[in-house]
Length: 146
Image 1 (cartoon, rainbow, N blue to C red):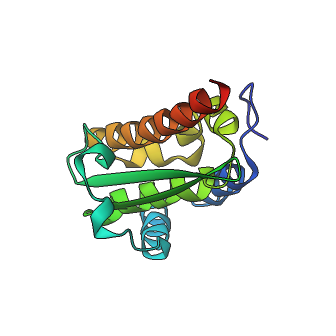
Image 2: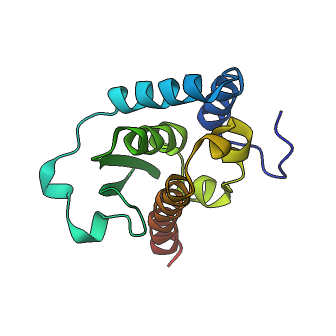
Image 3: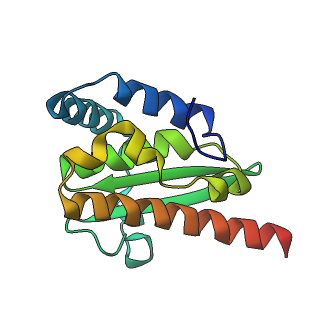
């Protein structure tokens, strides 16, 4: 179990556990590439400036839609490892309520062991992707409570 105050959503907890079992960085990269391959294609028309994640070296896009009170994410990147990070975050956060997403903190990246494997720019990109997903969730949250 993680040592954080707020427990991770079940999908994210499973992902963290999966990465914890990979002891070397090469295996973690392979796991990320596996996520990248699983990521459903994102419609080209969604690759617009409003959906672009700023602060990433590669091109990264994230969309979020609210369906029955749950957020459905889509994303893409032109770099395979970053696409894997996008896929990991989407798998971990997709289908949660805005409130659940807002409560997640990025500390779980430490637990995956990925942070030490990522270059500083990729680690920074990960946080930027995560923050954009949270920002979109917050937008829905504020819209619902207004």
